[in-house]
Image (spheres, one colour):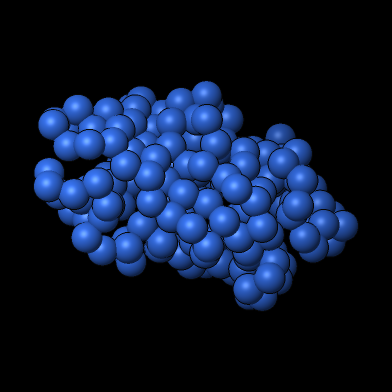
Length: 179
């Protein structure tokens, strides 16, 4: 499938779907974006590619790339002494998918696709809720020394959490809430 065909399919799909409240819509969108990035050999959107890959795999256990920096930030929020994070900002940025939103917005601008999903907070919130639901029970395994797994947990309608299992003596933890 050529670049133009993928872009045409995406334009039609985005015209028909202004809100992403069904898992099948998220999966379709991310699969088509992944095809586009691979066809173009475009490595300018590593976080988008990571989420595209994560969406279609039951677990992520290699090729952490861009997510390593995010995992390091999340890891720094937890200490051996506490069951709770010392800071919530990194965790909530991850749960709100703040960096992903920025990268998606730039990708869509580059390919001249409609950006309304990323411009309006209500659209983005719906997108994040649905994507979190897709990614629930699809852990990131052994992303760095000391962390056995990281999983997203969806509670629906703007509520989610991150579940972290440690293998370095720290107590496993769940953090999150309303985004």
